[in-house]
Amino acid sequence: MRLDVLEPLLRRPGPWASAYLATTRHARDDAQVQELHAREIRDLLGEQGADDATRRALYEAMLALGPDRQGQALFATAGEVVLTVPLTTAPPRGLGFFGPLPRLAPLVEYAAGEPACLVAFVDRGGADLELRHGGGPSGWQGRDRTESAGHVSGTTPLSRVGRGTDLPGRGPGEGTDEVPNSLEENADLVAEAIAADARRTGAEVLVLAGDPRQRRAVHERLPVSLREAATETEHGGRGPGAGSGSLDEDVDAARAERARRRTAEVVDRFLAGLGNDAAEGVPALVEAAREHRLATLLLRPGGGDLGREVWAGPEPDQLAVRRTDAAYLGSGEPFAARADDALLRAAVATDVEVVLVRPDADGVGDSPTATPVGGLGALLRWPYGEAESDHGQARAA
Image (cartoon, rainbow, N blue to C red; front, side, top):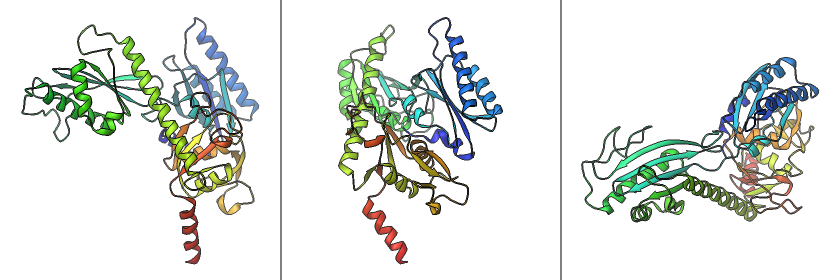
């Protein structure tokens, strides 16, 4: 998960009011329930010291939210709602927070989406490509969205249309001058087009549907990395009347499996790198954030370190475990903040990936030995030894 969408929050000094509100509507009185939760958040923010103008702006924005998302996160300061982010999971009731920093940790939990998936409907005549994506790295869309990613025709000169999906190495609207005379040549063209779209869209998962023989031929011709991320399904096709219900389930399963494997890979790298190019514990992570050494931040909900107090300055890399570490906190007045929010602010500023480690879904448990210990960990851009060597050379100079 990339957090670059949160960059507007770095440009304002705060204090911040943060609200998380479910907006799904399945029952007749859900609109009234949403209004009730909005009032509760407004009143809760007042109890925490939020100013009237900011509370009013948030309340009006919450009332205006439609039911087309699972929920929304809203961030406001100085009487203005600065940013609204769709959620992929509805939060319980309403959550409201007021403090010196935006309350970001719940966003990681409720907006964590599964990776974008490219679906290719193939047959002997070519392929139709479709991109499915929800929250997370592909753009923080709230619920899953489907959009056309192009069309590949193998029985006529190859062309791809829609959203700039031209063939690699060809200009807009250009095709090939060759008409494939075999299923193998058609599969080559389709595989090339799929690979180009995967690169363009950032899709991490590929599902091949349609003619069994042709999808196998396409599968075999994909680049190795994409071939390993691809799965075939018996459901769905290019022809009219091809059902999509079971296909949707297959796509959801493929995306969920990719997300699970990605988290497992990061956790394995983290455990193998502890003490070298991985770290856990608030003091080590604060130091790494200060030195811009965070590469991937791991966050496990419920960990004891998430709410630990740290001290921060006006800039994201101005962090310290103690207020007396004034050299790290800039010239302004330092303030106390939660460790998770301070580290996430630093992650936004330095384009750090954030990986949510769910205690139940990712098999890491919530025991004293859960990973990461305390709920916060990181893969580092360079190991401790290199950092110490750099500091030593700087001191010698």
